Length: 295
Image (tube, rainbow, N blue to C red; front, side, top):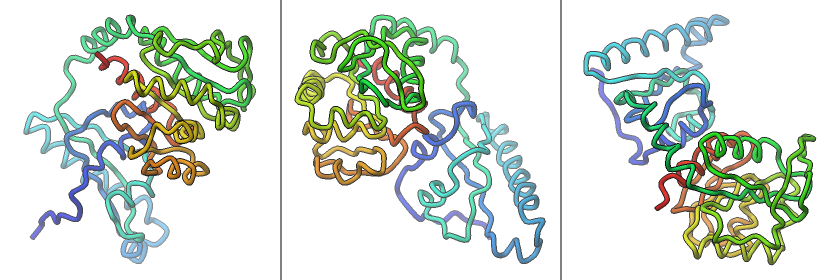
């Protein structure tokens, strides 16, 4: 007899979706069905054909789930690209059990175009500032965040300790138009600290600390990615919050009184943090959503 067994009361859907590439086009699923295979058993039976067998069987199971969902008026989306080890850990699976396929189930978004227009109407009234080091910021974190905000209509500015052309770790160039010492937090709806090794420039910066504290006190959207959450920790604005960041920053984040999770993305109130370059896309989306939702 087939039956479901409760192994955890935790809702890990958003943590799994956070690692899924944007091209998978999945958001806010009501349910995630994870198809798994026990490697030792299958390999004993199939030998070198294990991978093909696992994928075919997983596809058949997923198809059945999709057919049943369709009869119930639900929409589905299959997810092939995800962090296997993270899904195994979040779902409390044994090491010998490998997640092969994920099916997202929920009500289909029938008005995406209308929602996009609504977002743009709100976004064009909003302003954000991205604070980067004068050199060695992480290129993807800056460019992906800037592009997503600007494409939605948010007026976006780059602030740094030097106005003019600044260079990222990967050699990219950007134009900083705001001198950090003259930054007025009240002019912006969101203040975002970009990571990279250059972020160390602000680890002991009284100016950066003041900006972070003002943003928190004024209830602004406050973001930090990669190494930058250490700036928030040293500024004393994340005490008691769930925070993520680059693994090298775990101790310092914890010293700041935060609960370090190591997840790709964390949202705690209006404080948004992300683990590093690989999470740039979901970090940018989270910042945009928070800006749009802000009263």
